[in-house]
Image (cartoon, rainbow, N blue to C red; front, side, top):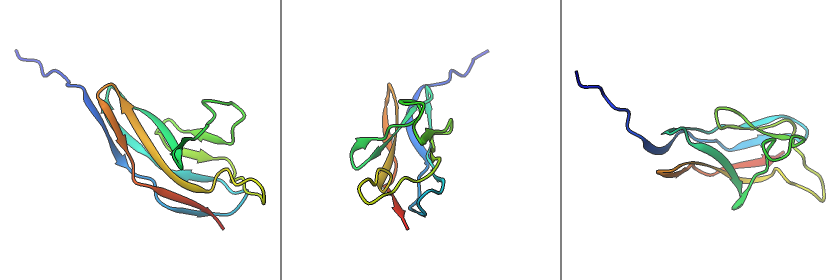
Length: 109
């Protein structure tokens, strides 16, 4: 009989992150979920720069979850350093292309 071959397809974002207002020292999650074949890799960008996660540095306070969401163990925010506040996008990529999520702002209350 005829077997349906699973076609590869470029990524598409199926869950976009939403704006967050969080308190300093609290955990937070920016959601992102993408579909694609092969399964897309997910990276996060803030203000155009790639966000470092535990995948880059095991000691990072930011974790990239298996779903693609970005989890902050605790929001870091000081007078001099505000590494977590800003506008984020998630980018899903495979060899067929990439998809970029809506912007989501993370604001520290």
